[in-house]
Length: 385
Ligand SMILES: *Cc1c(COP(=O)(O)O)cnc(C)c1O
Image (cartoon, rainbow, N blue to C red):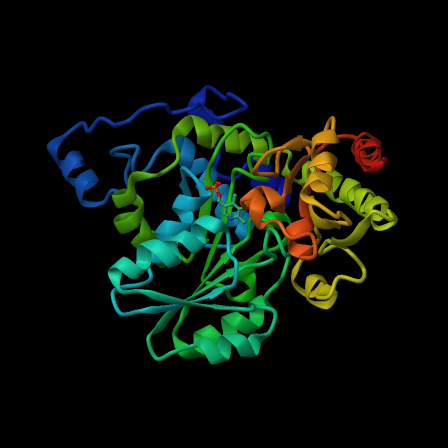
């Protein structure tokens, strides 16, 4: 299916809403039934009918069709956050006594599900360095039901070989989930490598405008229908119609934004590489990235996130650099119009900072939609003594 067809037409039915170019926001909680029999049908099959907007909603349905097609999946659910999508996908696939193998240091709230919530229900998790397929093989136990991936990781950018993990999991009857937030479907389609469930924080590139929080989950028709009828309705964290509309609007420009972002990020990367005050730059788009072969195999491109290690002798040096930035904003999240940084030292108590530890001197940079020189000049002035 053509990308332009998906973004401009798929799922839309303009004749049904006065030929309006953009779809209406069906800001309604519930839907009327004309007969008792219609109501009975709606109650018996909420997946196939508009009954109540915690389940199906027409604006959300347009988005579901587009996102499923973008991921090369049969179906899709849209959540009120990426975290909700992770939670639903994970708990739909484990029960008491089961075991999960997760890539190490997944997104922080995924890790909290594995470390804090699931142990209460007798589900345990083993973390592995996902760069080596043998680590997955070794970690699998007879009760392993789920392998959780995030490729690339949004801090370390470590990749997993999606096809290899999918093949291993399939042979063992294990479900695979991949967090695809870094790439978005524009740069990577985990389902096409054999992964069962693909999720992403739509807060990032799908929205693209830093104005809404949302999550996307895609997979087979059967898997999605099952999750809809249990976790999706039960957790009650489906996206609201207005937020779905914002994502539809964001989607129209996804290819433009990402293409621009990739070009700019390459220039910023090259600038950072040349700076004496910078020890290392970690970027999956780099020629000398340690997993460059795998990037070439399973990703169509690299986006706007990278990390760099500042040569700093103290916490004060780290803070001075960050505080000196005038245009690059200090904030969590990424994927919007604005360039952002988060220094790793902000994630720990001041007293724990150790300048000899490279990880403590890490700064994550998100390159937004600004002109390259605007970003580079800001970095330049902050690096200058
Ligand atoms: C932001 C993010 C999430 C969580 O998404 P929310 O929309 O913030 O709930 C999950 N995974 C990754 C890699 C993220 O960057």
